[in-house]
Image (cartoon, rainbow, N blue to C red):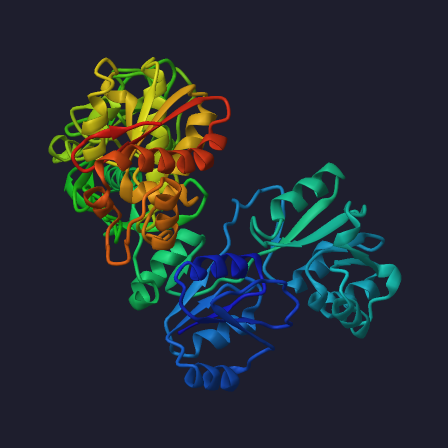
Length: 588
């Protein structure tokens, strides 16, 4: 069982991550005032001292704690650390410390940094009021900005604050003052926005540094949290996540660069994902300036699982490269090349998508300081996959017009197991390439078998015109509409067709099962009186239907399918083909 300490934005994000497992857990806040919906979690509110926390963990068989509490909740962090249980600290993402801000370690430093007749706007929380009251004795006026909650207002009054000293976040604009006091609360705490507003008003900014926490397992985003839970409590998630080839390439590039510049060869390197969070990725080293990462697919069925993704980094003398770029990213052995339009880069470019390119560039910028355009040396990063050419034959790449190897892909950097998002993203790429090929018609099919049968009807269409939808019929039709595809053929076999006819636009067995009563209704509508109580698969109907009733039944199924599909392609012409096991194709 997992116990989460929340009450923060990070607590809310932790809930989203844990809910993906469908497994019970506990969520704890101090005041119970956070509005949050739990489906699998059970809420517990109220402060816990060391003994209360120990008893709670023992009673509820807590095996792992997620500390997503406020960074300044120092006493709670200390109490959590004393439980002896594995702890994941869900930390915030912090911007770099600006030099024009006065940074302090403790409230006591304010007494030497402020002069009488100064107005100080304190945004450090209602519990800090008592520590700031002494400033008033030195002729400093203090205004406290707090949340408009009855409990917060009452606590402010208890510590000696008067109503004219209180202002509220809910009132909008920040009141004017000579000096503002902030906590280093990170991006989710609105630190950057508060600093920007204070600067706009010409305030002097003093910031209290966040406490240093000593937790071993620290994450700062949802993907890192899930992967750390999978590592420390493997049974919590039925299926485990993996890494995209883009993340693997980035990790290898970071490792190769660090080794070249510093000689360091750590077993793990930090990789900043597109959402800004940082995860640690295992790497290995081949030679100076060359490192690699083993692709980890988790429980996602991925033919690239276990492959080696390499990166080699080398400086180039002279001026900047490639029209002013300080870094050129190239494709080496096993990385395919685009041969058709419709991608982020023109034909002939290495098949390294925009997301991974940006991730590699952003991560290397943290290690290499780019010089101004036209000055100094540039850098070349070459990504290679030794097994790429062989693996590519088992991917969508040949259909997409990517030749010679695999593509380096990934939008988020993390692959969730059996990710619908990843599969739909591949459908979108295929549909984009199909449109860019100039084909007059796009033909979507559930898989290779149905595609073989349908291809015979459209012998002049290019290979790129045929796209597999798997189970995601509705999503594929929606993509076709978004791309402005006007003529679309949907090839479907009976097992998926009867689900689609019933309105299931996602035909996966987890989402839809064969409904015999509905099928019996289709048969009656087609004028067929058959007993189907003993069938186990929809395709068995083909063997039972009289020859003279097959077309009537097929037309009935197609009409029901069209009723659910055509609205998703309102500006297009949709042709639905029903295919039997022998390859015979039925139309209305």
